[in-house]
Amino acid sequence: MLALARGPGETADPYRVWLSEVMLQQTTVAAVIPYFVRFTQRFPTLATLAVAPEEEVLRLWAGLGYYARARNLHRAARALAASGAFPRTQAALRQLPGIGPYTAAAIAAIAFGVPGLAVD
Image (cartoon, rainbow, N blue to C red):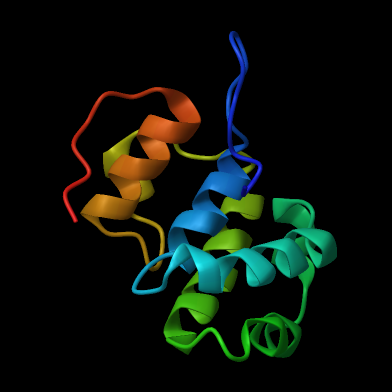
């Protein structure tokens, strides 16, 4: 569905997991899918999102609502690109703009196999 599934021995792409989790905040899966597809076509990597102008990010986000998510996503992408690595712990993930306890737990579990509770 959102190309996050992994087979035996494979890990999920942290960028795609993070993007989907942020998009799914306060929004249904059905509403998110077309936006996720457009975003990953235009910004296939964290680096492409990080260097994009904020106006372009907001333009692709238009209609999904809660625009602070898009601004935080862009700010976090720039911070992640500058650091060179995706944080693997819930505590480190929570330092990124727009990531709270649930999103941090979900990303850590799905992308890195870190046990934890994601309570919504």
